[in-house]
Length: 339
Image 1 (spheres, helix red, strand yellow):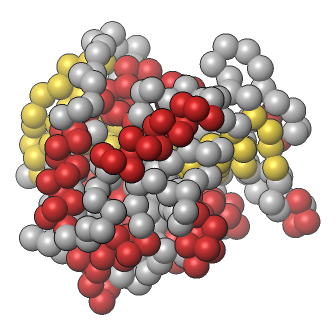
Image 2: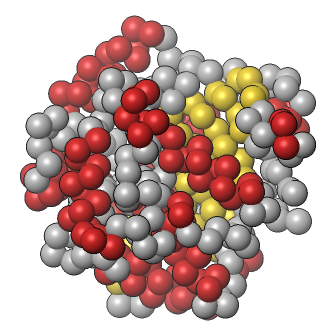
């Protein structure tokens, strides 16, 4: 069974050198004889900085007593105005296979890769505009380009509308650039959508992309998982369990358990090599860890990074010292040749 964890991590040795975060490896599958597949990345931000950022997140994030999807959408749109302008990239609106979206292109092109990136937002909020800084920072690092679909959102468009849009864009890009030059990624709901899309396209006999990169993927709409509620409800500064449930029902209703909505419980075999980054403080982190376990169990090459004390999609918070190395590692993964 193939594992693509860093060799230093697999040996239980902390990495060193420029851009390498302090870390220690742990093997949750040692009793089965399988190789280690996870890396615990130790916090680099000071406790004072983490407290400050978490306090700000609690104030700025979706109101803690609000589960209304349109209010959540409006709040996320307002927060998007606070994000820094991406540098080193150019953006332009476009339509791919009938789906609107945005191209994000590195000014200094060093790679032929095209990233199909699905934004988060609980299937009820978000768009290319809310993730421009995050995607721009990632594109600048790997030197290629990304297309961020503005896929349809609930409650106006319920499941499987988002998956239908994702399928249309993927099928067009796989023809335009070829599987060797296409990588797929996403965060939160976008990570779940990317995972569901891979299984959907595999079942259709379509070629798989080179890599799959997931940030805090939401892959179980039947949850949150009880273990997560018990251990992380007090540490998640971005969302609550009832908000997650409300978004799931708004998007998928009685179909939340279908693999296209909850890919964690579907067939995950023959998916592309996958990297998953989660924060240890977030509710959805447990889902990312379970996803890595299930991928490994069916022979998919997977790398899981658990970033200690980090919140949901911390990669989008530039003031955190973890922001840059996390994106560096994602970009490095996307650039690693398969084989």
